[in-house]
Length: 263
Image (cartoon, rainbow, N blue to C red; front, top):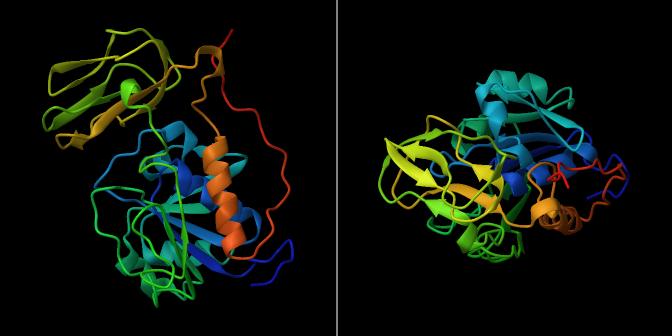
């Protein structure tokens, strides 16, 4: 791979996942010139939606670290968008639907889910990278990057998971201060309460059908140091590791301030 500031110019990267780490990777690849497409993993809802491009799938205006994303609904829309490289594309289309769009220069599996079998990515793109446990360089991908924890080291004491399947309805918004025992939403009418004091960092999108065991909400317990928007240090480190694996320099860009809990 070339090392110039426009090292990825004219190249296409497909990132599997729309979570906060997949989105951070998308931002960094976009900055070095790649045309980037994020493909949603519909089996697991995204929690940290204000730190990700996920909500663009629903037509929301989403900007992360000054990079905008838009929804793409079909292969032709993606093909045309990749000719301009202005925005990150976010789509419900899976990898089999994206492969006919054109040559995939870089394929990155950033789904980071513990309960699925890791696919063999080799041969599906010129370079394939697997993030998290289960990926082995030369085994099922060209490069493997370790990621702390299956889901970004989420504090188990700060989450609430679904005890049964149902439809989730959120009563609060990400970024809201909450108190232990406060009702945050309901699962098919069953109230779901905050497990601790803090700030809502993650919340399944309202109206989503979820399976038993799915995490519904996450609370950041750090008070005024809580973060619920922007790219956090962990996601930034993973994104930089991806560029290193591709032998690309990180583009220099001013880091915008993330939302913080008011003092």
